[in-house]
Amino acid sequence: MKDIHPKYYPEAKIKCSCGKTFTVGATKPEIDVEICSACHPFYTGEKKIIDIAGRVERFKTRKAKAKPAAPKKIRRKKNQK
Image (cartoon, rainbow, N blue to C red):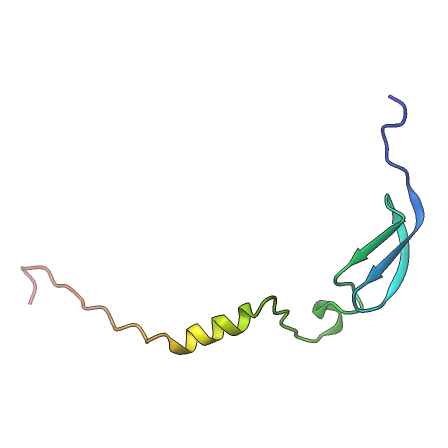
């Protein structure tokens, strides 16, 4: 059962799309990430909407065009007035 574990890199380089880089221990020598603690809204306190392919805008457009739902009619039983 020798050599079943992956190679460990104690100083793996992490690169974020925001430009921040840092080192951690990992099983890969370099890791590219899209979001990190320097740019994540939970840590920065900023609220961002990450819009991929205009999905948020299309949703807002559909919501604006939608008709408000008509109130449902209440059916009464035959014995009630």
